[in-house]
Image 1 (cartoon, helix red, strand yellow):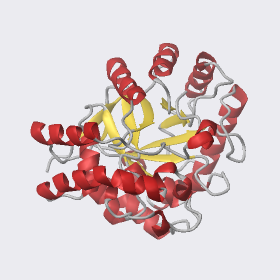
Image 2: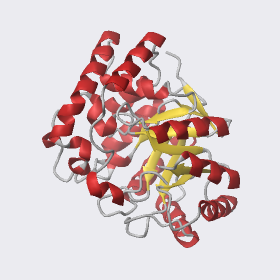
Image 3: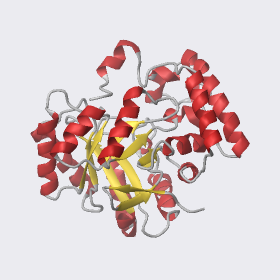
Length: 340
Protein backbone atom coordinates (compact mmCIF):
# COMPACT_ATOMS: atom_id res chain seq x y z
CA UNK A 1 0.00 0.00 0.00
CA UNK A 2 1.27 3.46 -0.92
CA UNK A 3 2.22 5.55 2.12
CA UNK A 4 0.00 8.62 2.51
CA UNK A 5 1.88 11.79 3.39
CA UNK A 6 1.39 15.40 4.50
CA UNK A 7 3.42 18.47 3.58
CA UNK A 8 4.79 20.73 6.31
CA UNK A 9 5.57 24.34 5.39
CA UNK A 10 4.74 23.48 1.80
CA UNK A 11 7.76 21.33 1.10
CA UNK A 12 8.79 18.91 3.84
CA UNK A 13 7.11 15.49 3.49
CA UNK A 14 6.11 13.49 6.57
CA UNK A 15 4.07 10.33 6.99
CA UNK A 16 0.34 10.83 7.36
CA UNK A 17 0.52 9.46 10.92
CA UNK A 18 2.97 10.79 13.51
CA UNK A 19 4.40 9.10 16.60
CA UNK A 20 3.78 10.59 20.05
CA UNK A 21 6.52 9.74 22.55
CA UNK A 22 5.00 11.01 25.80
CA UNK A 23 4.19 7.61 27.30
CA UNK A 24 7.81 6.51 27.17
CA UNK A 25 8.63 8.66 30.17
CA UNK A 26 5.51 10.37 31.59
CA UNK A 27 4.43 7.29 33.51
CA UNK A 28 5.06 5.67 36.86
CA UNK A 29 6.88 2.85 35.02
CA UNK A 30 9.01 4.36 32.23
CA UNK A 31 9.61 2.20 29.16
CA UNK A 32 13.08 0.69 28.77
CA UNK A 33 15.37 2.11 26.12
CA UNK A 34 15.33 -1.13 24.16
CA UNK A 35 11.53 -1.19 23.88
CA UNK A 36 11.30 2.55 23.20
CA UNK A 37 14.03 2.45 20.56
CA UNK A 38 12.35 -0.49 18.82
CA UNK A 39 9.06 1.42 18.75
CA UNK A 40 10.66 4.51 17.19
CA UNK A 41 12.89 2.61 14.77
CA UNK A 42 10.09 0.36 13.46
CA UNK A 43 7.98 3.34 12.40
CA UNK A 44 10.83 5.02 10.56
CA UNK A 45 11.84 1.75 8.91
CA UNK A 46 8.31 1.33 7.54
CA UNK A 47 8.49 4.56 5.53
CA UNK A 48 9.70 4.91 1.94
CA UNK A 49 12.76 6.98 1.12
CA UNK A 50 12.15 10.71 1.30
CA UNK A 51 9.29 10.47 3.81
CA UNK A 52 10.10 11.52 7.38
CA UNK A 53 8.49 10.29 10.58
CA UNK A 54 7.01 13.11 12.66
CA UNK A 55 8.20 12.43 16.23
CA UNK A 56 6.56 14.45 19.00
CA UNK A 57 8.09 14.76 22.48
CA UNK A 58 8.03 17.16 25.39
CA UNK A 59 10.55 19.00 27.56
CA UNK A 60 8.44 18.16 30.64
CA UNK A 61 7.22 14.64 29.80
CA UNK A 62 8.21 12.96 33.04
CA UNK A 63 6.83 12.42 36.52
CA UNK A 64 9.04 15.22 37.90
CA UNK A 65 8.59 17.63 34.99
CA UNK A 66 12.21 17.20 33.89
CA UNK A 67 13.70 16.54 30.44
CA UNK A 68 13.73 12.72 30.64
CA UNK A 69 11.75 12.43 27.40
CA UNK A 70 14.21 14.53 25.40
CA UNK A 71 17.13 12.69 26.97
CA UNK A 72 15.66 9.37 25.83
CA UNK A 73 15.25 10.77 22.31
CA UNK A 74 18.90 11.85 22.40
CA UNK A 75 19.99 8.35 23.40
CA UNK A 76 18.05 6.94 20.46
CA UNK A 77 19.77 9.18 17.93
CA UNK A 78 23.10 8.63 19.61
CA UNK A 79 22.67 4.88 19.04
CA UNK A 80 21.12 5.30 15.57
CA UNK A 81 22.64 8.48 14.10
CA UNK A 82 21.63 7.43 10.59
CA UNK A 83 17.97 7.94 11.57
CA UNK A 84 18.35 11.63 12.43
CA UNK A 85 17.67 12.80 8.88
CA UNK A 86 14.72 10.41 8.54
CA UNK A 87 12.79 12.00 11.41
CA UNK A 88 11.09 15.35 11.92
CA UNK A 89 11.47 16.14 15.62
CA UNK A 90 8.92 18.32 17.40
CA UNK A 91 9.34 19.17 21.07
CA UNK A 92 6.87 21.06 23.25
CA UNK A 93 8.28 23.37 25.90
CA UNK A 94 7.67 26.76 27.43
CA UNK A 95 6.92 25.18 30.79
CA UNK A 96 8.26 26.80 33.92
CA UNK A 97 11.45 25.31 35.30
CA UNK A 98 10.43 22.10 37.03
CA UNK A 99 7.55 21.47 34.63
CA UNK A 100 4.71 23.27 36.46
CA UNK A 101 2.60 25.66 34.40
CA UNK A 102 3.33 27.68 31.27
CA UNK A 103 5.53 30.76 30.94
CA UNK A 104 5.96 32.25 27.48
CA UNK A 105 8.06 35.20 28.56
CA UNK A 106 11.13 35.81 26.43
CA UNK A 107 13.40 34.69 29.25
CA UNK A 108 11.61 31.42 29.89
CA UNK A 109 11.14 30.48 26.24
CA UNK A 110 14.87 30.90 25.73
CA UNK A 111 15.59 28.86 28.87
CA UNK A 112 13.24 26.11 27.70
CA UNK A 113 14.68 25.91 24.19
CA UNK A 114 18.23 25.89 25.53
CA UNK A 115 17.31 23.12 27.99
CA UNK A 116 15.97 21.03 25.09
CA UNK A 117 19.10 21.60 23.03
CA UNK A 118 21.29 20.68 25.99
CA UNK A 119 19.30 17.47 26.50
CA UNK A 120 19.59 16.59 22.79
CA UNK A 121 23.39 16.97 22.99
CA UNK A 122 23.66 17.63 19.26
CA UNK A 123 22.37 14.15 18.37
CA UNK A 124 19.39 15.53 16.44
CA UNK A 125 18.37 18.87 15.02
CA UNK A 126 15.35 20.43 16.77
CA UNK A 127 13.08 20.68 13.75
CA UNK A 128 10.02 22.20 15.44
CA UNK A 129 9.55 23.96 18.77
CA UNK A 130 6.08 24.50 20.25
CA UNK A 131 5.06 26.32 23.41
CA UNK A 132 2.87 23.73 25.10
CA UNK A 133 0.08 26.22 25.83
CA UNK A 134 -0.75 29.86 25.15
CA UNK A 135 0.30 31.98 28.13
CA UNK A 136 -2.46 34.47 29.06
CA UNK A 137 0.15 36.71 30.68
CA UNK A 138 2.09 37.25 27.43
CA UNK A 139 0.63 38.68 24.23
CA UNK A 140 0.63 36.39 21.23
CA UNK A 141 2.56 39.01 19.29
CA UNK A 142 5.31 39.24 21.92
CA UNK A 143 5.56 35.47 22.15
CA UNK A 144 5.93 35.17 18.38
CA UNK A 145 8.60 37.88 18.28
CA UNK A 146 10.61 35.84 20.78
CA UNK A 147 10.13 32.61 18.84
CA UNK A 148 11.11 34.36 15.61
CA UNK A 149 14.32 35.59 17.27
CA UNK A 150 15.18 32.12 18.57
CA UNK A 151 14.59 30.61 15.16
CA UNK A 152 16.72 33.32 13.53
CA UNK A 153 19.52 32.36 15.92
CA UNK A 154 19.35 28.85 14.48
CA UNK A 155 18.01 27.09 17.57
CA UNK A 156 15.23 25.35 15.60
CA UNK A 157 13.89 25.32 12.05
CA UNK A 158 10.12 25.62 12.35
CA UNK A 159 7.66 27.16 14.83
CA UNK A 160 4.51 25.53 16.15
CA UNK A 161 1.67 26.27 18.55
CA UNK A 162 -0.29 23.92 20.81
CA UNK A 163 -3.89 24.19 22.06
CA UNK A 164 -4.44 27.48 20.27
CA UNK A 165 -7.74 28.98 19.19
CA UNK A 166 -8.32 29.83 15.52
CA UNK A 167 -8.10 33.55 16.29
CA UNK A 168 -4.80 33.04 18.11
CA UNK A 169 -3.39 30.98 15.26
CA UNK A 170 -4.22 33.72 12.78
CA UNK A 171 -2.67 36.45 14.95
CA UNK A 172 0.47 34.41 15.54
CA UNK A 173 0.92 33.52 11.88
CA UNK A 174 0.66 37.20 10.95
CA UNK A 175 3.78 37.89 13.03
CA UNK A 176 5.87 34.84 12.12
CA UNK A 177 5.04 31.73 10.05
CA UNK A 178 3.52 28.81 11.96
CA UNK A 179 4.34 25.42 10.43
CA UNK A 180 2.25 23.17 12.70
CA UNK A 181 -0.62 23.66 15.14
CA UNK A 182 -1.10 20.81 17.62
CA UNK A 183 -4.63 20.26 18.94
CA UNK A 184 -6.62 17.30 20.24
CA UNK A 185 -8.84 15.67 17.61
CA UNK A 186 -10.71 12.37 17.88
CA UNK A 187 -14.25 11.03 17.48
CA UNK A 188 -14.59 11.94 21.17
CA UNK A 189 -13.12 15.44 20.69
CA UNK A 190 -14.41 17.33 17.68
CA UNK A 191 -15.84 20.52 19.12
CA UNK A 192 -16.64 23.80 17.36
CA UNK A 193 -13.28 25.40 18.16
CA UNK A 194 -11.50 22.30 16.84
CA UNK A 195 -13.29 22.71 13.51
CA UNK A 196 -12.39 26.42 13.39
CA UNK A 197 -8.70 25.73 14.02
CA UNK A 198 -8.64 23.03 11.34
CA UNK A 199 -10.29 25.38 8.84
CA UNK A 200 -8.05 28.33 9.67
CA UNK A 201 -4.93 26.16 9.43
CA UNK A 202 -6.02 24.93 5.98
CA UNK A 203 -6.52 28.50 4.82
CA UNK A 204 -3.10 29.60 6.06
CA UNK A 205 -1.16 26.54 4.83
CA UNK A 206 -0.47 25.22 8.34
CA UNK A 207 -0.37 21.51 9.17
CA UNK A 208 -2.43 20.16 12.05
CA UNK A 209 -0.86 17.63 14.43
CA UNK A 210 -3.99 15.95 15.80
CA UNK A 211 -2.98 14.49 19.13
CA UNK A 212 -4.86 11.73 20.97
CA UNK A 213 -6.89 10.58 17.94
CA UNK A 214 -7.57 7.45 20.02
CA UNK A 215 -9.02 9.35 22.96
CA UNK A 216 -6.01 8.63 25.22
CA UNK A 217 -6.55 4.94 24.52
CA UNK A 218 -10.32 4.78 24.97
CA UNK A 219 -10.78 4.26 21.22
CA UNK A 220 -8.40 1.35 20.88
CA UNK A 221 -11.13 -0.98 22.07
CA UNK A 222 -8.88 -2.46 24.75
CA UNK A 223 -9.62 -0.37 27.88
CA UNK A 224 -12.88 -1.41 29.53
CA UNK A 225 -12.35 0.15 32.96
CA UNK A 226 -10.14 2.80 34.54
CA UNK A 227 -9.13 0.10 37.02
CA UNK A 228 -7.14 -1.52 34.20
CA UNK A 229 -4.78 1.47 34.16
CA UNK A 230 -1.63 1.20 36.31
CA UNK A 231 -1.38 3.09 39.59
CA UNK A 232 -0.08 6.60 38.99
CA UNK A 233 -1.47 6.78 35.45
CA UNK A 234 -2.71 10.36 34.98
CA UNK A 235 -5.72 9.11 33.00
CA UNK A 236 -7.25 7.72 36.21
CA UNK A 237 -8.09 11.35 37.07
CA UNK A 238 -9.50 12.27 33.66
CA UNK A 239 -13.22 12.90 33.39
CA UNK A 240 -13.70 10.42 30.54
CA UNK A 241 -11.97 7.63 32.44
CA UNK A 242 -14.51 7.64 35.27
CA UNK A 243 -16.73 4.56 35.28
CA UNK A 244 -19.97 6.42 34.56
CA UNK A 245 -18.64 8.38 31.59
CA UNK A 246 -16.83 5.34 30.17
CA UNK A 247 -20.11 3.43 30.28
CA UNK A 248 -22.01 6.31 28.67
CA UNK A 249 -19.48 6.70 25.83
CA UNK A 250 -19.34 2.97 25.15
CA UNK A 251 -22.35 3.41 22.87
CA UNK A 252 -20.17 5.43 20.50
CA UNK A 253 -17.14 3.16 20.61
CA UNK A 254 -19.33 0.06 20.14
CA UNK A 255 -21.00 1.57 17.07
CA UNK A 256 -17.63 2.54 15.57
CA UNK A 257 -16.28 -0.93 16.34
CA UNK A 258 -19.01 -2.47 14.20
CA UNK A 259 -17.86 -0.35 11.24
CA UNK A 260 -14.23 -1.30 11.89
CA UNK A 261 -15.04 -5.00 12.08
CA UNK A 262 -16.90 -4.76 8.78
CA UNK A 263 -13.71 -3.37 7.24
CA UNK A 264 -11.64 -6.01 9.05
CA UNK A 265 -9.45 -3.41 10.76
CA UNK A 266 -8.88 -2.52 14.44
CA UNK A 267 -11.08 0.20 15.92
CA UNK A 268 -8.00 2.37 16.46
CA UNK A 269 -7.15 2.34 12.76
CA UNK A 270 -10.69 3.41 11.88
CA UNK A 271 -10.45 6.37 14.26
CA UNK A 272 -7.02 7.41 12.97
CA UNK A 273 -8.27 7.17 9.39
CA UNK A 274 -11.34 9.29 10.21
CA UNK A 275 -9.21 12.01 11.79
CA UNK A 276 -6.94 11.98 8.74
CA UNK A 277 -9.92 12.37 6.44
CA UNK A 278 -10.83 15.68 8.11
CA UNK A 279 -8.17 17.32 5.92
CA UNK A 280 -5.16 16.64 3.76
CA UNK A 281 -3.17 18.92 6.10
CA UNK A 282 -3.98 16.84 9.18
CA UNK A 283 -1.42 14.49 10.76
CA UNK A 284 -3.02 12.15 13.31
CA UNK A 285 -0.67 11.98 16.31
CA UNK A 286 -1.27 8.85 18.39
CA UNK A 287 1.15 7.82 21.11
CA UNK A 288 2.69 4.38 21.31
CA UNK A 289 5.32 2.72 23.47
CA UNK A 290 5.72 -0.54 21.56
CA UNK A 291 6.60 -1.57 18.02
CA UNK A 292 3.32 -3.41 17.37
CA UNK A 293 1.19 -0.40 18.22
CA UNK A 294 3.44 1.99 16.27
CA UNK A 295 3.03 -0.05 13.09
CA UNK A 296 -0.71 -0.51 13.63
CA UNK A 297 -1.17 3.24 14.10
CA UNK A 298 0.94 4.05 11.06
CA UNK A 299 -1.17 1.76 8.92
CA UNK A 300 -4.28 3.60 10.08
CA UNK A 301 -3.19 6.56 7.97
CA UNK A 302 -3.34 4.41 4.86
CA UNK A 303 -6.88 3.14 5.45
CA UNK A 304 -9.32 4.31 2.79
CA UNK A 305 -12.83 5.31 3.85
CA UNK A 306 -15.66 5.47 1.35
CA UNK A 307 -18.13 8.34 1.34
CA UNK A 308 -20.79 6.01 2.77
CA UNK A 309 -18.45 4.89 5.58
CA UNK A 310 -17.60 8.49 6.42
CA UNK A 311 -21.30 9.32 6.45
CA UNK A 312 -21.99 6.39 8.76
CA UNK A 313 -19.22 7.41 11.18
CA UNK A 314 -20.40 11.02 11.19
CA UNK A 315 -23.96 9.87 11.84
CA UNK A 316 -22.80 7.89 14.87
CA UNK A 317 -21.08 10.98 16.25
CA UNK A 318 -23.99 13.30 15.48
CA UNK A 319 -26.49 10.95 17.14
CA UNK A 320 -24.62 10.45 20.41
CA UNK A 321 -23.57 13.00 22.99
CA UNK A 322 -19.99 12.57 24.20
CA UNK A 323 -19.90 12.58 28.00
CA UNK A 324 -17.15 14.01 30.19
CA UNK A 325 -14.60 16.78 29.71
CA UNK A 326 -11.33 16.45 27.81
CA UNK A 327 -9.24 16.27 30.95
CA UNK A 328 -10.30 16.54 34.58
CA UNK A 329 -13.78 17.99 34.25
CA UNK A 330 -15.69 20.16 36.69
CA UNK A 331 -13.87 23.01 38.40
CA UNK A 332 -10.51 21.27 37.95
CA UNK A 333 -10.87 21.76 34.21
CA UNK A 334 -10.55 25.52 34.70
CA UNK A 335 -6.94 25.07 35.80
CA UNK A 336 -6.00 23.38 32.51
CA UNK A 337 -5.69 25.95 29.76
CA UNK A 338 -7.08 24.01 26.82
CA UNK A 339 -7.57 26.84 24.35
CA UNK A 340 -5.49 29.99 24.25
